[in-house]
Length: 529
Image (tube, rainbow, N blue to C red; front, side):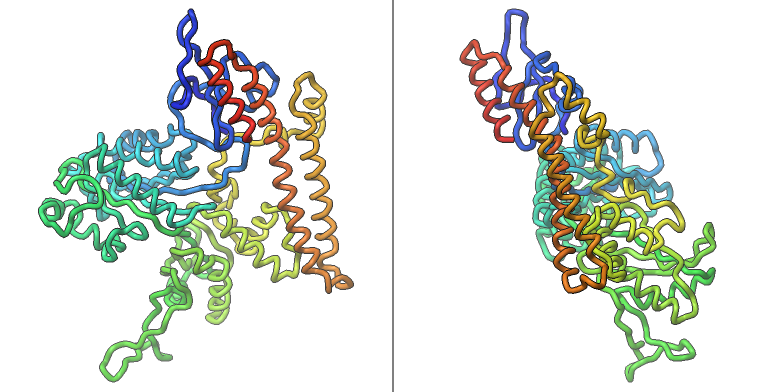
């Protein structure tokens, strides 16, 4: 949940007393907010539900409900050597509440750092802007050199839908960020990929053609008028490119061989680009015009190559899966397993480099559960563990789901203090002098136990051949039980949070018309939760 903020929001008047301004906790409850005077809450659970007061503006963060919308943002700054500059840029984003800094990958040769942010859309949008603003302040493109193509201090900044986000929503974020960067930082901004304003600009290589050195000419060419900001050369910053794109999964599959060519042969067969047809002597087969014949690749949205990984003594098929809605990692894994067997090798495991969306892991787990004729009505962590084991994701390095899955990695602290208590601890809290938790939280707990029992019955029945005719039915009921269990477990804390919010709002002073207006709005907002 969102920590409190000690200044009134824009919808509330600033109150005063004979001692000066009266400061309030501005507490966010789901999609609404209420003001709580300092010292008005003394329940034992106050620290759990309202957090600590911050003395700086902080972004809205979901409270009282499971985070729904999650977006990833991957700004690339044109600095990979000066750690101080990198740290200042990443800190500018990380200090925005609700914007989680997931990864920082600097490269000295490329003089570029790839930064990964994630969280709720508004927080990530703000974090991205603050990072860009810091790069605008610190990086001088007129002195920048490096192996990687670049045109701006923050060169690219794509938004990627992760959870409950559409591509259209990411496009809107890209446009909002582009406008703000253009207006406030006064630099040229071009949109590309799904956010592109022209078909030819969908390809980053096209819109960035000529890189930084081509900007003076582009800024005098009407055909290169940017989407936002001035159509003028800004030598210090350059120009930046903002987009919306699909999630990219970097995925490698390991072979029980040290011969890189075997991995390369498989890569040529699976990649979308395909390969040249060769005969039994590995000579290229040509058509009547002398051009090599092509064999189409097996997977769309798949870029693949093969190499030898000396540190681990294995050949790897390495790939980027550029659209997880089109090509799933576990499907590629199974096909590579078949191709490896055909050439006398064997797949020993695989690895995901970087992060992966939760749904991709759940789909993989469900796929292998179905192959085993097991029920899908399992807790999501059990389903993920099946995927990890089936794809050998721990072979080279540990696949820690709390760090590798985007939705888990961005969770901060204990978002369910009651649900995560021991049974004894919860009972002791219930029996204390605090009015909350109370009947609502207890009802949610009992309901979650009932839902768990229903799921258990389905799982015990599924897989027994004497009940095979009802497997689908009991599996569906078990899945529903798991969904209800999760919702009710969440409600244990949500009910107590809502109760405390209503109580806090009702304790607000109302002696003056101004105070009464504040209290009335706070009570209305609290009751909406």
